[in-house]
Length: 398
Image (cartoon, rainbow, N blue to C red; front, top):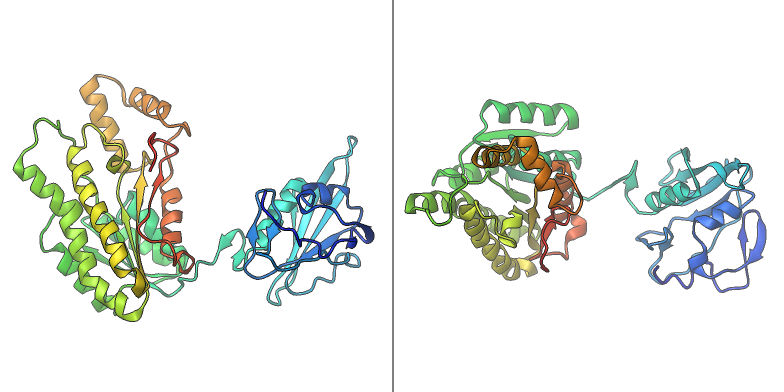
């Protein structure tokens, strides 16, 4: 629950369901209200609303009233949402309910839902400005984004999420033909500009080359997604200097150099987003991934330090800690573990899923959606944070 004390105005009676009914406490105005209404009713959509846990919009202190029912449900004013039910079953429940929405002069659309609870869920969606067909407008259409490791897995998921928001993209990896195929797919599906750059983050010259290509193609970079595949598994008692040098080049030196090259333009324009794909291993070290744990930990420390230094310039720096998501990298790690243990890959995966409270591997698009949020206009006050997308895998506190 959350407080919406002025949800129906100043008390007394409110127009609801085509009749005057006694004003009730805001917490009672949930799906039960639709269940009891004999006629369609409407609620106004107030700009910048929040949502309570029980499904009602919270208007941040401004007064909201329930408006009278519409005649036949056909006259819906701009900025309103109409709720109606279809009929009652034998046990008094709904056969169904629907939502009709009219925003910014668009024609109303009636969307059937299975129950009054579903109707309230549809109302929740309709009540959030910029939300259409269940997608929030993140305010980054036309922004220029550079995404690493985009030929597959998490990098590709991030590129897809940003393309869906209308970003212009430069995507890079050492994927070659696979990267070109991803670029063609994004152009076809989302109708956005996509430039591909073939580069290896383990190459000391990669950062300068990628930054130069991005600026040449886009003019500047507004959104930078730092992401690269991980180093090989290693016995933590048998590391070597060459392994450390490669891991730090791949996971710390190259991304830090790339961000350092692109940050000045972000700061000068007063807007920028840097999002780093790290690993759950920076909080809960993974035994055979010692190179990754350490190098990504160094990058995390840089992110936190830098976030504070540039926050006043309108540039945010945040990180994401993926757990076990269904990517080629996780497939490879599972296969390696199976070979070493003498188990089948399926046995390894079953054991891994048993350690995840959610009981499954994550989907790359689940992480991609959060990265798009961090890159958005709406996340302007979030910086220096590191969120786990891991199904509850990390057991310790942040």
